Image 1 (cartoon, one colour):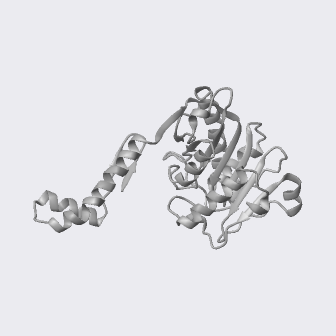
Image 2 (cartoon, helix red, strand yellow; image 1 turned 135 degrees about the horizontal axis):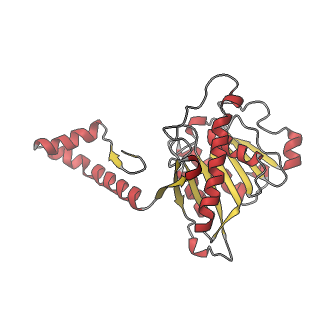
Image 3 (cartoon, rainbow, N blue to C red; image 1 turned 60 degrees about the horizontal axis):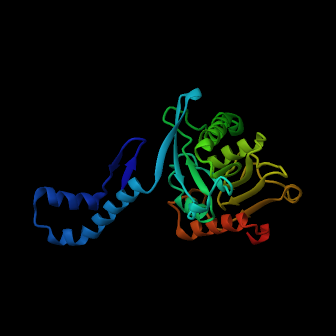
Length: 282
């Protein structure tokens, strides 16, 4: 496997990989090992190639906060149809706390197929304080959410001039866990460029209650949301908020690391909602 920071990538080898590479270094006769691992080595090289050449990993610099913000940009499958006259939609994808922003490719690919440019954003830097785990979490984590909302706002205004064929004034904010808290925080600030919010099992910040913002919240089945985060039946009807639970799903599995059936179900619900399905059919 590989690990990357903003500037470099390194290859991390598991025990089986080490056996293979040591056999080469030592010059031992390991024909069977080579036979068994040649396909594995090819897959490793192919993975590195596509990681380097097929994904637009980058950072943008927020001078006012002296902050290098990691982003990955992926374009619509039919990006040639995007123009200044017919702008394509934009989605900001925010990860859960501790999960790399690059580990939601199942969502990025789904949104690309739906015509969205996706900007996956890394909110946590090494210099940031750790996310609070004690006290009144709404109070102690508000600094994190406020900072994240400021980052989303900065990314919007920073990228918009460079992508004239994309609509940054009707943004989709889609996010998992703490990223959903950040996205809800920004939406609750009343920014007129937020058009839709999709949260995946966020738990702390109340969903926006607004007739101007479409809201879908996909819920896992192992952790409840805090009181007031999800709408009442009356609020759901009034504001058109859709809440859908996935049975037997786990909060920590809602990333690229999770099972295929769960990623497929999340993708299906996202696509159905964005394609205009009524909530009961999402």
